[in-house]
Length: 50
Image (cartoon, rainbow, N blue to C red):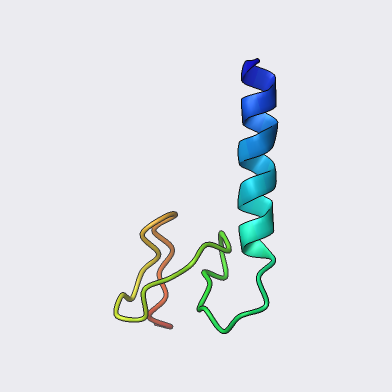
């Protein structure tokens, strides 16, 4: 049962990463970003460009 839950979570996350909207995404992990932050809250990647 746990394996099915893991597969379901993976497929859901993968589908969210393939959206065609203009939502800013982290170049490192691909998750949605808040435009006010200069780092990714998911993987802590530096987004300030410095």
